[in-house]
Image (cartoon, rainbow, N blue to C red; front, side, top):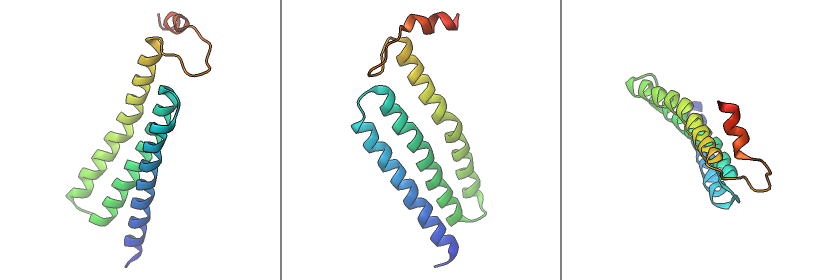
Length: 111
């Protein structure tokens, strides 16, 4: 095995680990906000590691460019989707565990 194969295997294993930890975090955390935090961070990192390991395996080809486009798309859309979900939950009045705040204060800041 060459060093590219070793690096690719390590990145794929690391990506799988992060996706697994994110899934466990989404199941074990107590409320929406902590579940969303656990799953969004690890999902982005895990998928980028897996895509990068695939890019190393394909070498310089059209498939690598397509995987890079997918990685860039995920890099921008995953955090934006997490923010939109958290913001919608906050504005609808879903309170985090142990927090004391008034959602009307957030609505007033936006106008």
